[in-house]
Image (cartoon, rainbow, N blue to C red; front, top):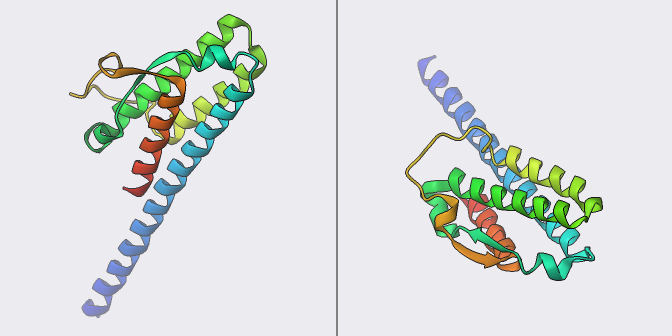
Length: 147
């Protein structure tokens, strides 16, 4: 009886872990899709030339191993800066959908409740233009999806 119990518990643990990994993978895929949609909205905007000139703090995906939530939080904060800029220049049509996508990224990345850590602050990262920022964020999501 004991022999079967251990085997059954092992199988349950394996399936539980596989389900957890699948949920994490889906969350990062959703983040990537939301980010792609934000980028599409910005590209279609009549203010695209203005948007692409924005300088945003861009964390390196290499920091994601040790500072995953901090790096993601920096990207989300910078996306919120883009939303503020869009609001200021009067491109209000896009603001609501972008806000929704940024909220989705924040929720799926589970960064709403983030404790202090020893990682860099956002302002310590290099400033890059919007296209490089988006590429950096995409690289981060791909890396975290594969972890």
